[in-house]
Length: 78
Image (tube, rainbow, N blue to C red):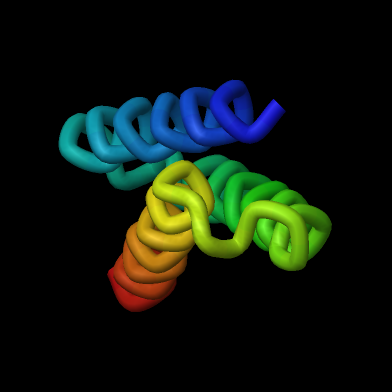
């Protein structure tokens, strides 16, 4: 499940970066999708913290969460 979540959210980020580069009128959709990715990652990380908090996959997901939050902040400021 964690690998699928990582792939899903990575696809969100990559897709949204491409959308942001081509059109600014899609900002509400981009923010909504980034918010969905952020909430999904937070939920998965919270659920697996005690059992898998020390794994590389958990660290990758936490890193992606930081990236999603940064993208979300940048989209709000644009």
